[in-house]
Image 1 (tube, rainbow, N blue to C red):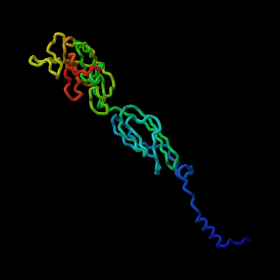
Image 2: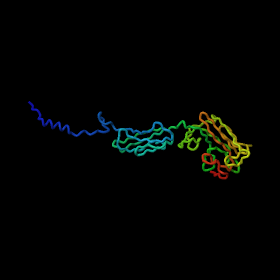
Image 3: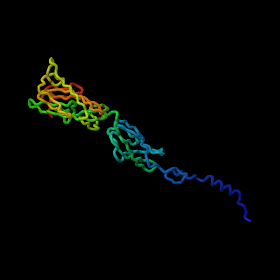
Image 4: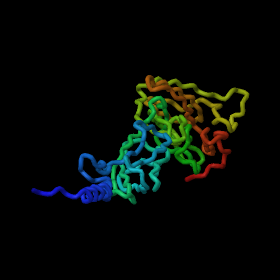
Length: 291
């Protein structure tokens, strides 16, 4: 008959079992049902779902489920113009161009494996800000502001000055650029589509110098003689005669909107600067700077 184990050995065995070192926390990457989940493989970019041109963006990239330190780097794709990524995961800046942009960020310097993930941003235009704009088919100033002249103008031939005898208006819909202003198609307005001028009602108002006015005043081109004025040939095209002149042009292009522009025919020594320069629309005769 087998003798029972002594009580002291039973107590020692129980004590040893209760004081054994605990098993280490397996952390990320163990597949046991009761273990911590596998490490994350994606990033949370925190970017807005809808973005408009000119929006200010401030978002922070995070590693879901990870509370330790990390560094973040832009590693590929196309970051939307105007945005930048810092090492602490902050994405910030102002959206400067419309379009869809996909870019990749790497999270590194962590206690878990590096993560590379991509985000996509679509930058839209604000439909409520669309407006009608009128530009012309070629630059006409002879000054350093070449090509930025808002008021289209022509120069009648005389005294050897360059001849500009016709000009065509170009009508389209625009969205404000980063300055947020309706600039009638100029400055940093963004062109959306062309509007056929045949879809517009064109109203002309011919400005004529009063009988008692100085025909050489510098606030408008002189228009004292009207024997051979400039004419509107249709389809947005204006043609000069031998006389200077000034048309106020109103365009009603439903459903796109309306626009107003001045079309000018000037003498050889005059250099229009336009209202966009914040001052009188003319330089004094003799101040033209060919180029």
